[in-house]
Amino acid sequence: MSSAPPAGIALSVVVPMFNEEEALPALVGRLRPVLDAIGERYEVVAVDDGSSDKTPALLQDLRAGWPELRVVRLRRNSGHQAALTAGLHRSVGGYVASIDADLQDPPEKIAEMLELARARELDVVYGVRDDRSTDSGFKRRTAGAYYWLMRRLAGKQVPAQAGDFRLLSREAVEALKSLPDQQQVYRLLVPWLGFPSGEVRYQRDERVAGETKYPVSKMVRLALDSVTGFSAAPLRIATWLGVVSFFTCLALVVFAVAAYLAGHTVPGWTSMFVGILFVGGVQLICVGLLGEYIGRIYTAVQRRPTYFVADDSADDPADDPARDAAHRAARDGARDAARDGAV
Image (cartoon, rainbow, N blue to C red; front, side, top):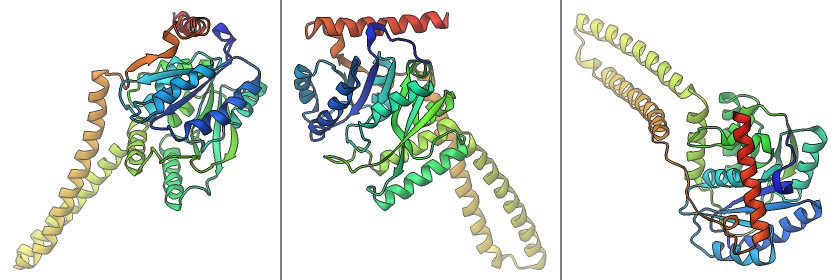
């Protein structure tokens, strides 16, 4: 379980955001009262994922009236999971919650998550969507298929309908920081760690403003990263396709020999043509699967960071020396504690 954090910051709330200028006022209007009501020191780590709208300017304006708000700005758009990684790695609270800026996940549940984690001594509390009626039928079906597949590939410890709305203890965050994964998919990584966990259920709301930042292309990319990052099943599928292809070719060889001996070689053209197409298709699928895994190996060998931080308001002592010094002390203390534990 989490010990008392340095500088007394009990809770960090990480909010990745990309072009969320329309949703920001509503987010602050709901999130800040919830955190103020907890009655403990907290920080909100807003990670600007290379926004091209007024999101960065609005965040800086909000900092003037909200001392607990901390802005981490990435140099370019690196993706939702990378922005979430940046926030988790720079958070300093004894517990760390993550939530999206669109308010589809209710901030009011954060206090319930924190209370449950402390009462039952849990390191992870998942936000589980038990009602997705506000989502489109296509979204519900594809999400259901995703979680069904992930639970069979990565294990039943993966909670169904649990996205990136969760609460983590400091120990769980440090464990995640120690992992060498290049493409993080936290909805699979966190259950894989095996920490004691619980669930808080809620109804998923509609996006409060703006457009979704997760179109079909990004959902497909997430599913592909999830499958290739947590299971070798696709390679086994390629092996079985190769076996099926071999026996199909063997049957066609027998058929071809029989047709030749019977003097009916011309009528066999159709079956041979179909056989060649089938084998070619299987080979392309297998090569594609191998290429995906080799690409991940290539990325891992390069060891390029998934994101670069342009600036962190906690590193600017000119804004608020007392608060930002506490942030820096907390971050340095957490890093030193993790290093001492590793030694």
